[in-house]
Image (cartoon, one colour):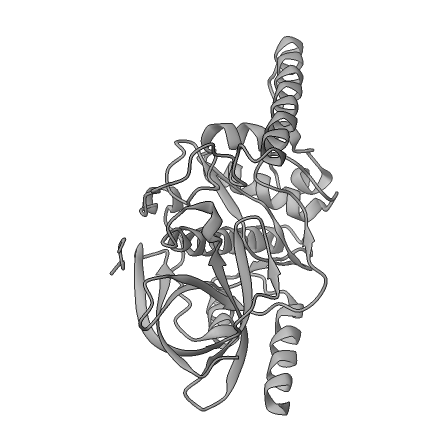
Length: 326
């Protein structure tokens, strides 16, 4: 890893709709250990005031996509808003006596001193990584909790958005996407009304959805409307197959665009409503712990695995507003 580097850290506060800033010191590996469709992942360590270090991951947008690294602000905002909905989901499950809870990793944006590029920073999550669904309406597992959570966000947001692209280790998720009714905010992964329709077309209403009191997405539809819905889903599947063929031929980028570039908006306060204030102002896993302890006062359910993960990280260590567009 590199020598410690000074960086500016930006953390989104959903209640105040602003970015809080702080200085941090990071050590970042020179080569990525993993990659997704849009970003490269590098191992890193965040140095704390007491001299200890926390294992983290730094994520960098792929230069081949031709998009500004500032979209990382959208990625961080998306994940923070997803966590806000996760806490609502946990509270609803607890209220109804259901033993389900989940969490999204705390994520911030960092800019290393002397560099114009901005990166995403989040705690390192060990374990088997599983992708449950994507942002194009495809389900890759039959995980009932992940599917019910996505549908929960749609219903409780008054059908203004849906949190999807659910993936991670156990019930600790990362890198979600959000589709909104108007296609605004939350970056290039926001497919707008079409993304919401794709999700609803593939969502299977489950027992957990019923237990949470969520109405079926097909409630009130006539036979004719149901038939039209099935036909629309088949047309979308055909379009997906054509798009994949275009990507294989090099005519379309991995984000589904024939041309590069995207300049999403930053505000979102109207989509959040009146939610408990929270912000990840402390570094790495310690910040996550403080946040989840704060959420206890709001009745949020906390997965016991989170504390086990925190303890494992500490044992490993002991052994060895808004910034705007620049």
